[in-house]
Image (cartoon, rainbow, N blue to C red):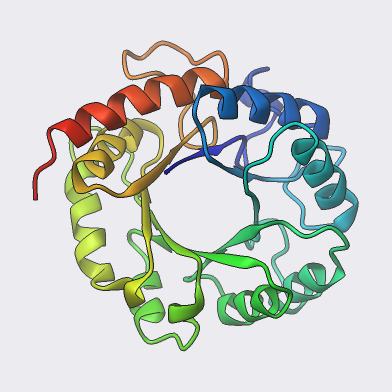
Length: 244
């Protein structure tokens, strides 16, 4: 499975290719799915372009994307969008249109409560485990671990030279991951080495303008669709050279 991450916390300063409005997110999602993405991760935005969990942004974002594609759509619950854990839970409970899944960063304060609120509403949980944090240790003892939809193994090492090593260390820290499927991805300079490793390991992955603005050759990507197209090529090459 290759998920497309449409925008992340990026904003207008990251270029016109990054979709910020519901309409542009929907158009970008349509191109990415046509290119081969089978799942969507998106950050709904406030009118000023900041990540938000408000239903006034979540609802039109989900409705616009679902009008264009028929694949699952998930959103973020990152603490930067709503720093107070109790307010984050309240936002989840206020949603009137529900995503198929939502990511929860397990190292963040209130992660268990946010995940529980999502599960109570029938929303799948993507457990975000960031390298360099205590997320893996906290997830290992979480009673909610066996109930999550998947684990997002998120490699924050942005060096193309060391990201693969960091990814392998993170996977080792995750261990059995409560038996849940693992999606492995990198960020910025580490994006492409980690994506190829995911192919070799037979793991799900993701690609999109949240993770990188650049193609493997260093050229600037013009769209999420272009990144998905190239991502599938790189992923399949890694899969064809699968190694332990």
